[in-house]
Length: 328
Ligand SMILES: [Zn+2]
Image (cartoon, rainbow, N blue to C red; front, side, top):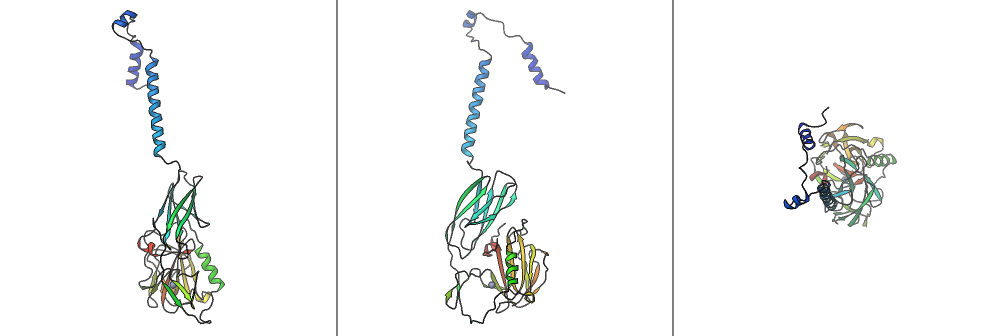
């Protein structure tokens, strides 16, 4: 094993073998203006210099680096009622998912790279516009973030119903739909913008508010988008996912009608109502654009149309940003 490289060995030997310069008397030293220095002094000076440099470097890096490890970014920067908030969190600790709390609810985040995470938070037409307070917990700290939520006006409809007009939903359909919307699958199945699930024209946009028999329905908003088209027209999956709900009128889906629910993963789900036919079964994996059934008018529906509801952690959000900007 070589302990010294050839060059370092040579210089080592030279310094050892060459005798020091012949000793001069004090008078000779004065004459030649030679100052005898102890060999330790330059080393001390060098050490002092190095330490000073290190100190400067450390204080500079302390000034440049943020005091806290958690980095948070919220998109969109200027959200409005119904938008989905995308909260990107960078941590120093790898492997521990941060969480985001908003209005007493805690939302999970999912890794997008080793120390980068993303949480999706729903907002709705029922929210108060103004400042949203977010608490991001991760890396043993809590970071408070204020997000301005813009107001937005929604179309209102006036509906007059006779007392016998509508039948209530069955317990079975309510329970199955509720359980479906709760799904939080860690995998992310969608990729890029969502597709239009029907070629029909949009007949009712997301978020429409209603007066029933002249009384404003405080908790109602149209939880999806309606596409009007003929019975039998194809319905396609707007994004990839797993079929996690199939309900039929014959099995108690009295209000929803023939229904398909697709789990896109990470708390994002789509529900398709009033279908004429269903062409998938529970557990099937569907690709974006794949046929899942046909438009119909089953359940509580007044004419053939597709109702597509997009949910984030069980809350109906505006699909428009998902369709046109995409939340990846
Ligand atoms: Zn609808």
